[in-house]
Image (cartoon, rainbow over all chains, first blue to last red; front, side, top):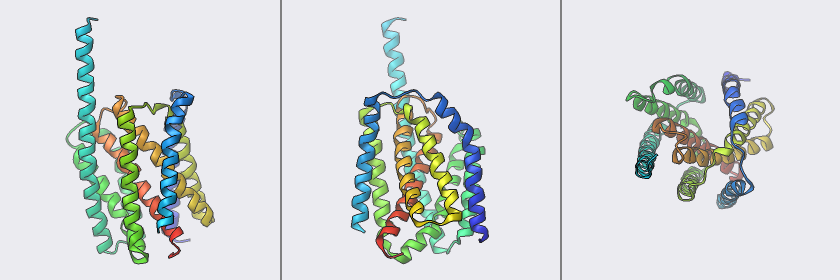
Amino acid sequence: MDWVKIGSALFLAAMLIFLFPRAKHAVQNSPKGSASDWMGFVLPMAAVVLFIIVLIALV
Amino acid sequence: MQPNTAIARSQTAIFETNKVIRNTYILLSMTLLFSAVTAFVGVVTGASFGMALVANIVAIVVLWFVLPRTANSATGIPVIFAITGLLGYGLGPVLSHYLAMNPSIVMTALGGTGAIFLALSGYALTTRKDFSFMGGFLMVGLFVVLGAALLNIFLAWPALFLAVNAGIILVMSGLILWETSQVIHGGETNYIMATAGLFLSILNMFQALLHLLGAFSGDD
């Protein structure tokens, strides 16, 4: 394994350690969304997925 | 509270929000252009993956430890340009790889990222939906994709590589909605921090889309 891979692994591990308290805080303090709130999120995500499939088909 | 005072305060809040949105998009455009220039420099000078890693690490360290301390002053502007410039330079080797493989992949990924960003930002701005409820969900998603990416450095499974990149695109799409909603609803009042968040989402999405298109193009 070359030093770039080891460096990348250390970098990602550091990011995970740094992000952990923020992630914990966000999970504990985010407001709860209603079913309509989630629909408002799922629909654009579905559109993104379809768009990516179209792009993959184009290349 | 008098009704006129409430209306005046509400108008002030709307004016402030619009100012943050306008400044964010102006700064975002400028930083994207600047990072395109530094990415070009990275391609032309033949930057190695090692140099790109160092540029990325320096950029992230500055993003975490310097930007939050300077974002409320004029110093924040050169700092955000330094971060985006380094991240753009860090893209150099990946761009060189895909340009040598099939240049149309880079153009498709660029156009695709631009279209997704404009559509999602437009959706959040026009519907004015509050996506703050997604904060925890997106953080968990980010954690999962980063953990899987770390694992795949050692496993090197092609299927996991595709899954990680697909996951990054979805998480970054969610973060674009969330960040735009934060600006609209007053959760983010600093346009430099908002720019940093949106820039990272766009950059990560572009890179993940590049990997996905490269993997499915059959040229790799």
